[in-house]
Image (cartoon, rainbow, N blue to C red; front, side):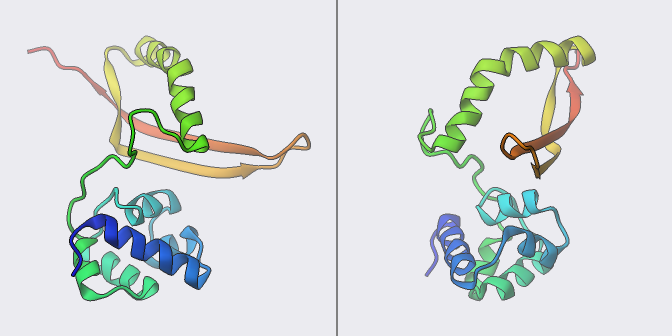
Length: 149
């Protein structure tokens, strides 16, 4: 019996490793971006029934796991307030150092509001560089102004 979405995530990761799959393959299977699909497979997004069934077939999941993929998850995957994984910590550090700069520049350009993480897209690519390959990350979120009432 499966009692949490975390168990389904573990099943997906185990199958991915066992079968030698890439997240891009899972994304192709359901016709979504590798970024969104990966977030969903890691328990942060909800799949519709056809997507869940296709992923169930790809990862050889039981029907119960496929049902869990269609339930709205508890979002937020970090186990601690300050992440300990080095790669995730660097993102934390980036926001810690540049967060106020990003905030100031967004407010200067758009006004008082936020960048949506709901109406959002992300693209991660390898950028060839003779001094060492670079990680190119593009985050694109809809600007949502605060309303006066």
